[in-house]
Length: 82
View 1 (cartoon, rainbow, N blue to C red):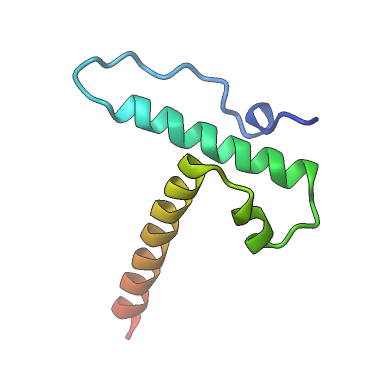
View 2: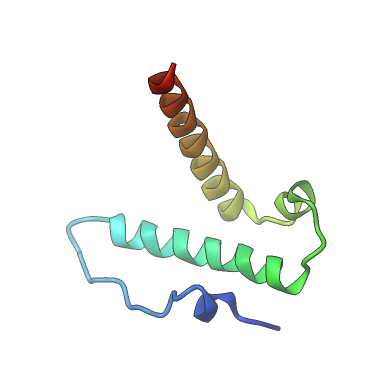
Protein backbone atom coordinates (compact mmCIF):
# COMPACT_ATOMS: atom_id res chain seq x y z
CA UNK A 1 0.00 0.00 0.00
CA UNK A 2 1.40 3.38 -0.99
CA UNK A 3 1.47 6.00 1.75
CA UNK A 4 0.33 9.28 0.19
CA UNK A 5 1.34 11.23 3.29
CA UNK A 6 4.95 11.03 2.19
CA UNK A 7 4.15 11.73 -1.46
CA UNK A 8 2.05 14.76 -0.49
CA UNK A 9 4.76 16.10 1.81
CA UNK A 10 2.81 15.68 5.06
CA UNK A 11 5.87 14.82 7.10
CA UNK A 12 6.25 18.05 9.10
CA UNK A 13 5.38 18.22 12.75
CA UNK A 14 2.69 20.73 13.60
CA UNK A 15 3.62 23.55 15.99
CA UNK A 16 2.64 23.05 19.63
CA UNK A 17 0.10 25.78 20.34
CA UNK A 18 -1.85 25.21 23.54
CA UNK A 19 -3.87 28.44 23.27
CA UNK A 20 -5.42 27.62 19.93
CA UNK A 21 -6.98 24.47 18.47
CA UNK A 22 -6.07 25.40 14.88
CA UNK A 23 -2.95 23.19 14.72
CA UNK A 24 -4.99 20.23 15.95
CA UNK A 25 -7.68 20.90 13.35
CA UNK A 26 -5.03 21.41 10.68
CA UNK A 27 -3.54 18.05 11.61
CA UNK A 28 -6.95 16.39 11.30
CA UNK A 29 -7.48 18.00 7.91
CA UNK A 30 -4.03 16.97 6.70
CA UNK A 31 -4.61 13.41 7.90
CA UNK A 32 -8.02 13.21 6.21
CA UNK A 33 -6.61 14.59 2.95
CA UNK A 34 -3.73 12.09 3.10
CA UNK A 35 -6.18 9.23 3.71
CA UNK A 36 -8.19 10.33 0.70
CA UNK A 37 -4.99 10.53 -1.36
CA UNK A 38 -4.08 6.99 -0.22
CA UNK A 39 -7.44 5.78 -1.50
CA UNK A 40 -6.89 7.55 -4.82
CA UNK A 41 -3.44 6.03 -5.30
CA UNK A 42 -4.42 2.53 -4.22
CA UNK A 43 -7.79 2.38 -6.05
CA UNK A 44 -7.38 4.66 -9.08
CA UNK A 45 -10.56 3.84 -11.04
CA UNK A 46 -13.24 4.92 -8.56
CA UNK A 47 -15.64 7.75 -9.33
CA UNK A 48 -15.86 10.73 -6.99
CA UNK A 49 -19.18 9.43 -5.68
CA UNK A 50 -17.65 6.00 -4.93
CA UNK A 51 -14.72 7.61 -3.14
CA UNK A 52 -17.02 9.85 -1.10
CA UNK A 53 -19.08 6.81 -0.05
CA UNK A 54 -15.91 5.29 1.43
CA UNK A 55 -15.18 8.26 3.72
CA UNK A 56 -15.47 7.92 7.46
CA UNK A 57 -17.48 10.49 9.45
CA UNK A 58 -14.54 12.87 9.97
CA UNK A 59 -13.47 12.68 6.34
CA UNK A 60 -17.04 13.41 5.20
CA UNK A 61 -17.25 16.42 7.52
CA UNK A 62 -13.93 17.82 6.29
CA UNK A 63 -14.76 17.05 2.64
CA UNK A 64 -18.09 18.86 2.96
CA UNK A 65 -16.44 21.92 4.56
CA UNK A 66 -13.76 22.09 1.87
CA UNK A 67 -16.37 21.55 -0.84
CA UNK A 68 -18.58 24.35 0.54
CA UNK A 69 -15.60 26.67 0.79
CA UNK A 70 -14.53 25.99 -2.80
CA UNK A 71 -18.06 26.47 -4.12
CA UNK A 72 -18.37 29.80 -2.26
CA UNK A 73 -14.97 30.90 -3.53
CA UNK A 74 -15.94 30.02 -7.13
CA UNK A 75 -19.23 31.89 -6.79
CA UNK A 76 -17.41 34.99 -5.49
CA UNK A 77 -14.93 34.81 -8.37
CA UNK A 78 -17.75 34.39 -10.89
CA UNK A 79 -19.62 37.33 -9.34
CA UNK A 80 -16.53 39.56 -9.63
CA UNK A 81 -16.12 38.76 -13.32
CA UNK A 82 -19.73 39.58 -14.23
